[in-house]
Length: 529
Image (cartoon, rainbow, N blue to C red):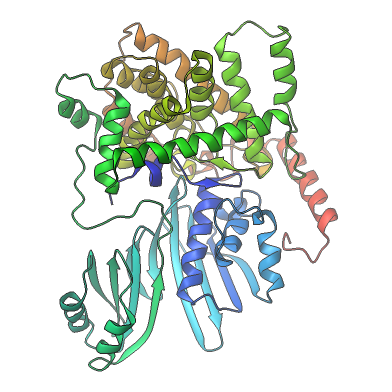
């Protein structure tokens, strides 16, 4: 699957503290719901004891996301904070257990759903920024990313023959016959579901069991034979061939090919995202409230002091700090944000881009172009590394955001293509090895400071690149290094709440206080327990 700017990098539009936990879990829950045709009365959720989820699933939104997905909701649904209780109110029995599954990926979800005699199992991973991969349906090994229409047909025998017959009858991107224990499931990936008429015809020749239809959960669908113009920075520069095209134009060219979209559609989709972000910034500055949070509303006072001239004179950097903190406060209050590239790092990139654009008097379309420029840098990261802090620490989130933002700022100010790439390289280099250690297991502090640092770093590196500072290491090599560092990073420092500031006495005390407050406010029968 080729990364898409709107699937993998800028998005989803969501609520919650973490895209890896909330948005990804919601998408996994929605697929599990459709595996049961929307009808189930028991759910077992299992997390591997050696993964990141046993210590983070409650406070970083996995439970909320899974419940919202099992209800069939969208990632920005205003009811998400109470989704688990709503699910329980439908008389669904929910159990959450920690098991010794030895799953290789730290963000692995195991769901078993039942209704009557029907039982379905789904194992999936969250790969960062809201992206997912389903690895098992029942006992069958599969690879499903939620980027197409999936029709699953169980058959008691002759699975390969059924796959061949389907290939002759329907237009599909892929038809796969899976076998496990002498039983078969045929998976059809296509732009639409296999029709009832086609299935009725097949049932006369094959001993079909259940047929399940799983809808896409990503905004940009995949298709057979996708050809993108480039997938690395070096390839992009060769494609440009010295024409010095703006980075945003190359990003549009890529996304048009990836998503089968027109240029106007790509721009319009990003303008919509910019408008969501600007509304969220205004909401954050005006003031946000949420009981289960470490930090209160702080950006309002910063705004007041900035306007009164009572802060250090940082110029546009002060506006960047204001917008970054406002967005982080909206995220922490369960407001609507855009994962860019993740929820934990949702503020650095848009805060820097929108603040500088407003300072320059630019319109929303110019902001959207800058966001697209950042998006293609994110594609290069997604292709060869990760956005998941559980895999690569905060360098994967804040480091990626700084890298993307630096390129966007240069492009927005009319810098050359080589300067945009240089800014991205310098910004990422200076954030390698950054750990992820959220205080009290909430994605607020030091995450707020790290987002401010990422945006400030991007701003400085953009100016350095415009002055032709030498990045020394090409961007592709920096991305490869980031992946290598991620693999070398101790598990305790990769967003598991087992290291860094997350295990200080103060952090533990805040976590206990917030937990007691939550328990007192909702009662012992609440879904929080």
